[in-house]
Image (cartoon, rainbow, N blue to C red; front, side, top):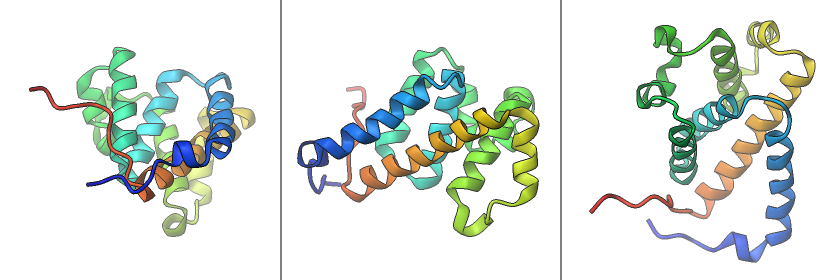
Amino acid sequence: MTPRLNYLSIIPDAMKAIGGVYQYVSSSGLPKDLIELVYLRVSLINGCAYCIDAHTRELRNANVPAEKIALIPVWSDAGDWFSQREQAALLWAETVTLVSETGIPDEDYEIVSEHFDERERADLTVAISLMNVYNRIAIGFRRLPQSKPAS
């Protein structure tokens, strides 16, 4: 796969604005590991190689077990690997990312509401939406993962 263009140099002001939302989410009070789990789940749904690579690395650097990272795509069948709060966040990540399919049902909103207060739900939804933006830009312009295979 060949990158299509270097959007970082072409639209730096736009990327800086999006980066401001990233900084907001980072300082929102949501736990970093939870945000990274959500970012990775959204990126897996969207198939963004660049973001999957980046957020897998972030989770590994945070000492999240490799087994837990591997189970993110099947979190609902992973037993005790994910707390109820993490499961609610991952469910919300899926239903918001797949909005055209899910319509974001009341049942999903009720589940996330059991584990996150109003502010946290809003911040979580911003985080999910942000990662969808990043994914679409990176996929659209074919941004390559930064990790390199071991030689």
